[in-house]
Image 1 (spheres, rainbow, N blue to C red):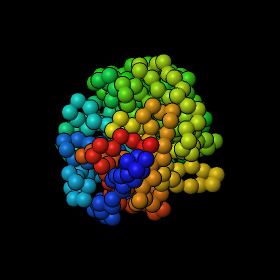
Image 2 (image 1 turned 135 degrees about the horizontal axis):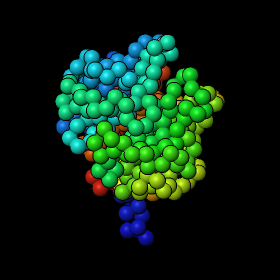
Image 3 (image 1 turned 45 degrees about the vertical axis):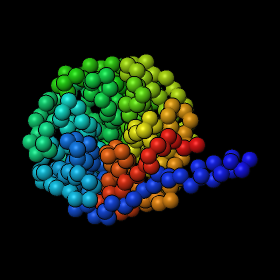
Length: 328
């Protein structure tokens, strides 16, 4: 009995994951909705959103430690950098789709595909990918292919038909194949797609306007065509504009926003199988926010910028003790 109590007390004293503020001001202008990748042992952000009545930024920044940031270029050739799809694939950074010019008359969505191996020099791979111009789609690398999943063709001025539930893949970013025009999950944008445990995973999202809707369902697929609903209602609240990553054999959901009433989220949830979720309770907790960047880098989950009322340029690091296997 004594040995059991001692083991229990010891387990309760084990180090736990926790957030650490790396910097309050990264040097780049506070923003949300930027592209983000890990590439060449550095974290990168690209473009984003400052407000709804100006063109989105076209700058590119990188950092080896989250504290010291260098600007690679102040004006990349792409312009649709609000809610683009970004990923690392075959030794390059990729930026695809996105929105430009907010609520201005010049607003538009993009079907362009760009890549770069240094963040300064960008190549236009295709002006018009097979998928329709869109923003806020899910993006992942799975089965040695790029995947674009769902999204919306219009940000502020769309209709319900603007929201998509199609699935596309490409081996080179130029030639795209429509795997399915209508996946069984509800059309959505502002969701997250993660490649985890040999499958593609679709998590949450929904629609901003018109007809706001937020979801907390979880789906997975090995081939992008045949989908299985793992749960219709995960324990985390339905949300848009959140982040998701895979790390230490777990799916992670971080932050986000929901409406009625308008609310930012600051919670963190993890799951091995997409069905059973545990909330990660930490001693330190960043301010609630949405449309931040989340990256896995140096065995940690990083959170960059986002709309924390107001926009910020903070960098946070969620570190894990050695041997951590998940929430009990």
